[in-house]
Image 1 (cartoon, rainbow, N blue to C red):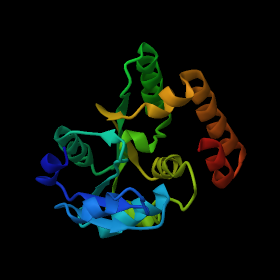
Image 2 (image 1 turned 90 degrees about the horizontal axis):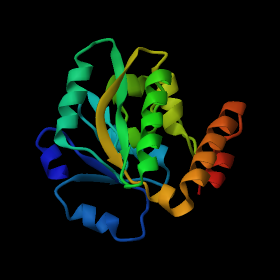
Image 3 (image 1 turned 180 degrees about the vertical axis):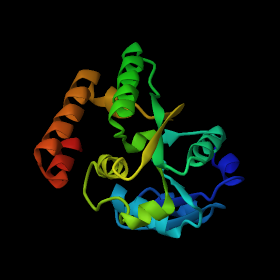
Image 4 (image 1 turned 135 degrees about the vertical axis):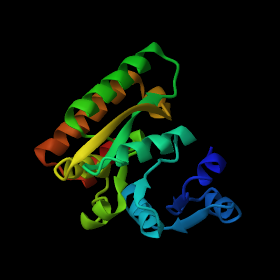
Length: 202
């Protein structure tokens, strides 16, 4: 996947202090790689600072996209009013319930214009820099970013799907994971700090 993408885009990995020789493997690869302290927001901001392009596309390590997605981002960004966007998501598991869950995630995101990192968020680099990137919070940095972006311009809700791992759902159970996700979002809306919420998410 990344070899195909590298022909059209700059690929930057940011390692957050892994203990499994990931950093050694990255250094021996043909990709650009940087290090930071652990934390999704910090890692993505660190990687973004190294990027030279006009558009930033953030991909979590357990999410897969193909080269066609790059053209979809470019096409969306041809509209000067679009500041960023996201893809529809597909969960990797085979349970029929996952098809319902991913459909609800995509519909909710399309309606609210709020997305999560699993949906491979993208944004114009100058806009990202003007708002100081992802907020330095322990959790829900993706939600906070998309809420800020929707006040600045149009967000593209692309119907092409990226695939993200369903391992959390399979490990903890579908019903329990749904309840946890909604509880975290509700408590965040009530003003509970992301640091406290991150302890629930672990």
